[in-house]
Every structure is written in structure tokens, then in C-alpha cells.
Image 1: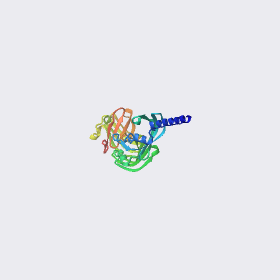
Image 2 (image 1 turned 90 degrees about the vertical axis):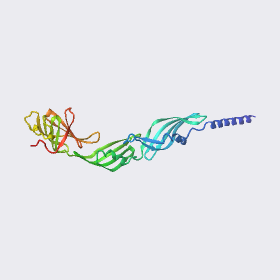
Image 3 (image 1 turned 60 degrees about the vertical axis):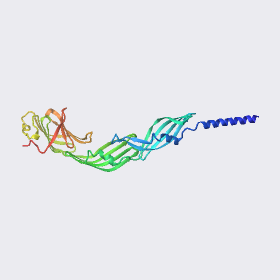
Length: 321
């Protein structure tokens, strides 16, 4: 009789175990998790550094692994490492997935949150030279691709182009490095023009109507100075009209004539990438420094707080007697 009771107890325990094991299946494994993500993470979008209205969209291969999880009777928290990979990028996302078990429907993903910032890895350069060259064609008439260097661990790509441009006041020639930096969701770029040589063609005769008349004869230019012959006459008329007289009325108290050597000299680039030669000189007229800005096909004079006035190149000294 005792043996019969023991046998019935064992059968009951086994029956309860079978009911428990068959009632709630195991929570989803990696294969099911991949399927849950297949739509949400099937593509990866990166901002286009050359056209912000047209982002790059890539198809991605997805694989997931469970680093750790905590499962209760009808809930499951899985901490997963999800990798999205294509030929250019590898993104690793760290996600906490919360599943709930329903009598009808089984295990269903109810919530997904990132518990750690994702890792971004650049596998190879996603650009070609034809995409990069238009960044330079507005500034240079000749743009030729030389080489590309990948610094993948730094997320950096360097494109080197040989450039040349001939304009009225300056000839630009040398190499420009276009450096692209990957940030995960976007790219940025910088232009390094430090290897571009600027040859300025500014010798000759210049005239501006600033304060009625400024004549400037550029006699010589070196890498760090400009030698100038300057005449200022407050009552002068526009030299381009051929009126010579007023600048040679040396008895006029508003007449100044001096030869100056400017050593305040800078080569700069505007925000639009245009080269600019900026120099200034002391001149007795008004007792201020006069600033001269030479661009590729225009030039301007400025003194004090007054607005810039265009500086014109003339073929010969219009005041020479």
C-alpha cells in the first residue's frame, strides 16, 4: 500500500512538471530576435555631406546575440548586441528587449530601448572622386584627382586633388586635400589649401574713388611686403575720366604723396573659398592705416569705419605728366 502511494506521488510530480514545461515555451532565441528586427533595422541612413536633402540609404545585414537575460514566468528582458553590416559600415547597437507572454499570441516584443550608445565602424570608403571633385570646381578651373588615403580606425578619408586656376589678379596652383570625417549618422568635410601656391598679379596702377580719389602704384611685391607709391587728393576727380590736374596741385593742403612699404601682409581665404590678399599701410591722409583687399578679379580699399570702395586697375598712371 505504501509503495502504491509513493508511485502515485511520483506520477503527480511528473504530470505537474509536464504541464509546466508544456504550458509556456522558452522566450525567443537569436533567430527570432533577428526576425523581430528585420524591418526596423534593415536599412541604415547617413546624411549626405554634399546634399543634405538627399541622404544615403544602405541595405544592412542583421545579426543578434544575447549577452544576458532575465526571464520570469511570463516576461523576459534580453540584453542584446545587434550588428548591422554592409560593405562600408558596421554598426553595433546595444538593446534591451522586453517580451511578454500571452496565452493567445505567445511571446510578443513590447519594448525596445538602447541601454548603451552604439558603436560605429568604417570598413571602407563609401565615396568616389567624382562625388568629391565638385567641391572644388567653383574655385579652380582645373581639378584632377591624385590619390585617396583611408584612415579607417579614425573614420577619416583624405582625397588629394591637383588644382589650378588663372584669374585677373591671382594664379592658384597646387594640391588640395579634402578630408572627410565619419561621425556615425553623418559626415563632415574640410578643405586643406595649405599646399596651394598663390601668385599675385598686382603690380601696376590702381585707382579708387574713396574720399574722392586714391591712386596707388604697386611697384614691387615679395612674400612679406608690398612697395607702393600712393597719392591721395581729397578734391580729385575720377582718374578714369582722364582728369589729371587736381592730384598735382601740391599747394593744396589736402594733397598727400608718399612711397610706402607695407609689411602688414596676409594671404587669406573668404568663407566662400576665394583667395584674398590683404595688406595695409600708414598714410598721412587722415592719420590712419589704409586697408587693401585684392580678390581674384576685384579689389577694394577701406579706411577707418567707412565702407569698402572698389579699387580699379588702370592700364597706365593717369596722372603722369
